[in-house]
Image (tube, rainbow, N blue to C red; front, top):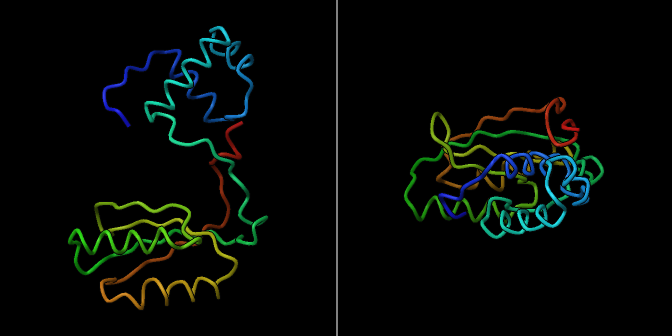
Length: 155
């Protein structure tokens, strides 16, 4: 993303709207933020070009895809050299169970958001991704019981 992009109140209102539903027609967005439809379209193009809007995606319920189990995992590495971090990041990007991953500071080195079919699938994942990697010192798992804030709750 380009740094230093100036966002005015109209941009911020427009971003709030498309974060709730990016399929809202431009004419409705225009009514909601107080701009013309053409101004809304111009601003959206500018925000996408600048990288402010990073992606237009559909958020699909994981259970529909056969992955109802949501887990957050804190991963600690033995060493954090560039090559080791890059290798671990590549491994995570290659796993479809990994929905999001963040390199973080604090007690863990990575925080992962996973969607899996079952605890058995998670056990296989931990063996392949964590236990077979000599650079993984340890991991802590947090099982999500239900989502209370997220895209489905923003309307």
